[in-house]
Length: 436
Image (cartoon, rainbow, N blue to C red; front, side, top):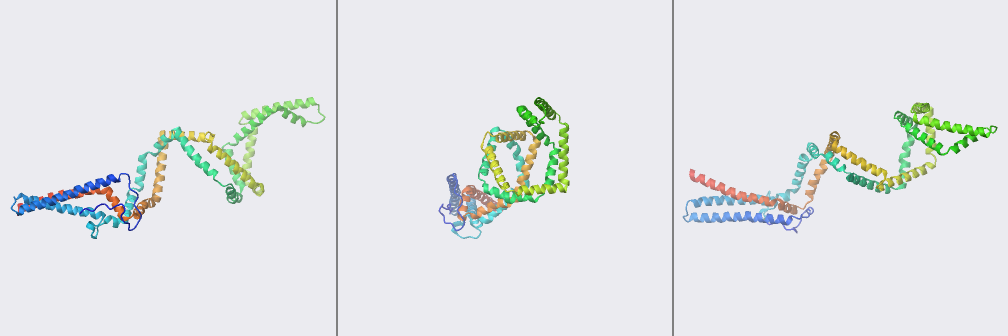
C-alpha cells in the first residue's frame, strides 16, 4: 500500500537533475523508512483489531466488542484517508491517475513561483532588510575587526594585490590611445584661462602657495650655505672691469651676507613685504585669467602650441610609464610608505568606528540605505532565482528529495489520523448507543 521512495535512477520526463544529495541523506532515508513502517504497522494493527472485534461480535461476543470494532473501523478510515493525503502530495496513490494527486511533481513550477513571491514579499521587504542590518551592528563588527592592525594590513594587502595586477595588466598603447583620443580632446575643447584662474584663486584662498614659497626659500638658502664661493664669483664677474679686485670681493661678500639675511627674514616673517607682493601679484593674475579676454586668448594660443607639439604624445607616454612604475612600486612593496600609511589609517578608522557612536550610526544608516536600495532594485531578480531553480529540477526527483526531507514528519499525520479516527469512532458509537 505504501509507495517506496523513487530510486536514484528514476526516469526523467523533463527538467534537469536535482542537486546531488547531501551527506545526511542515508540517515534521512532510514528515518523516513522507519516512520513509514510504524505508520503502516499501526494501520495493519487497527485492521486486525477491527476484523477480530467484528468477528467476535458477530458470533455472540460481549457488547464492548462493538465499541472496539467501531473504534478500530474509524481508525482504519482515518489511517487510509491520511495515507492517501500524504501520498498524493508526492505521487499517484497505488499508481492510479486520480485527479489532484502527485501535486508536487505536477505543480512544482507553480509552487516555486509561489515561494518566489512569498520570499520577495516577506523576506526582501525594505523594512525587514533595514531591521536586520540594524540588528547586525555592521559598524561595530567592522570596526572591531578592522581595528586589529593585522586585519587592516590584510585588507591593504588584498587591495594592493588587486590594484597592482590591474596596473600591470594595462596595455601601454591602449592607455596612450585613450589619452590621445578621449582625454586630450576634452582638455583642448575647454578654455583654460577661467579654469586656471579659479584654481589659482582657490590656492590663494587656502594659502597653499605659502608652502611653495617656503620650500623655495629653504632650497635657495641651503644652496647659498653650501655654495658661497659660487655666489661670490657670480657677483664678482658682474662687476665693471675698471673696479679693483679687492673692492669686487668685498662687495660680493657683503651681497652674500645680505642675501642670507634677507632669506632668513623672508623665511621667518609671514607678513614680509616680498610675500605680500607675491600675494598681490598672484591675486591680480588670477583675476585677469578669469576676466581679461586678451589674456585668455593668449593662454589659448599657448595651449594650442603646447598640445600641437609632437613631443606631447611622447611626454604622455613617458608620464604614464613613470606613473605606472611608481604605482607598482607602491603597491608591491609591503614596506612602502603608502601601504604602511594605508594600513595604519585603516586600523585607526576601525578603532574610531567601534568607539564613536555617532560615526557608527552614520555607517549603519548608510549600510542600511545601500542594502535596501540594492534589494529594492534587484529583489525581483533575487527572488526569481528560487522560481527558476525549482523550474529547472526534474519533477520526479524533486518530489523524491522533498519527501526525503519532510516525509518523516508527514508520517506522524498518518499515525495521528489513525489514533484520532479511532477515538472519534469510539465517541460516535458511544453517543449512538446512548441516544438510540
